[in-house]
Image (cartoon, rainbow, N blue to C red):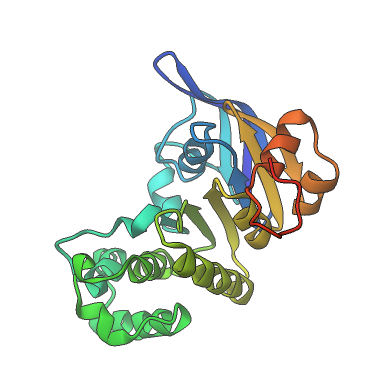
Length: 249
């Protein structure tokens, strides 16, 4: 569904993405992973047209993503950032309905869709009357996901959606996200720095380093057939608990 051909993006002297060629398959969950600053989030913004490439080309569902086409194409892409990115002056319901209101949906249609999505993400409907500051981190993430799904997009782009949550809530939301992805069958591209989360949620893993694609494939391939020493170190770089089997870093 996404096609990136030799895409590069720099900010002054800093190269964030360098010559990345990548295909994201329709209806599958692809996870972008790698160290901080490796270009994961920039690649996501190139996909939805929030950033234009300096060189190379990006296409979504066969159509070039350009400054001219990006606003229309983004209506077919849900986008979730860390902590939800909610507008603090709007209630949860106002955040969820923002684009739908802008497109002229009537109140009944908005209410019905919001109710469907609240049930999907397991958020009590009375929570929608609260402002973001009155919500927990997990609730804000659920509202952010509802907003991204409001227009029933073809693709979901999620940038570290669980990164700021405590371990228990993060664990629970990982289970919920996986179930939602399976139920909806949408194309999902998710950014994380957590290899365990990537392997749990992703059908395809894209490991990046210094703006370049290092290895792409199913989670098992990174574990059993790492492309180089960096991949081996990255996959192994997890502390094991006392008494837990594993090699550690």
